[in-house]
Length: 110
Length: 117
Image (cartoon, rainbow over all chains, first blue to last red; front, side):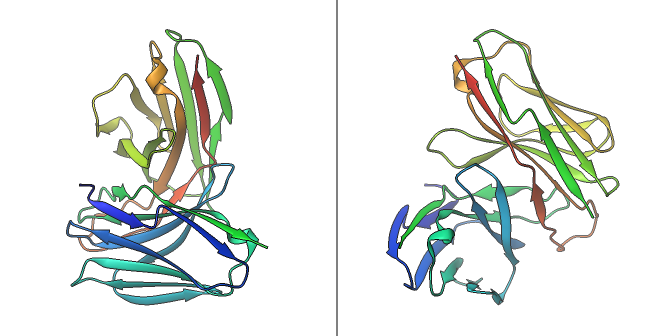
């Protein structure tokens, strides 16, 4: 079993739909990241959070430390949101190493 | 502002040939540096990380090595490539600060797509 599990692995949505991607982890963490990988491969950091909830535009990330679970929500989805969304967790220590989930491939159709 | 560069962007190499991928960071000092690989259909895997010049830690045994000859330069190398070395290689950096419990963003480079034929 991977230390970081994401679901679903693949997701197809219609433009305008509300989207949820889930991430569960089995290790103690100091922070959790949500990353977006575009078809060309470039990775952009969307959120880094260690508690509660963060919002940026149409994106919302939540984390429940007790349940070791995080969700990424996209409101009013758009075809340009199509990408792979990756959950990654970091343990303690100054090395800042990340453990990655395998990603969720999202396709938003017009 | 900080920027991270990787080159080349794409590379096709025959089995048994050497490899050198370079990553440089601008606009920061003494960063933590990381090399990741993403094999086809798989998640990102940490290969090496460095907390300072000449300090390299390897996460998985493999055919690759890393070096940090300068503060903001991180190089991934191989003497003889294998087919299994094909993948997408990403370099990343983060702030280097020895304070427990404080987490820092990692910033990723554009990546190098390596195909070993």
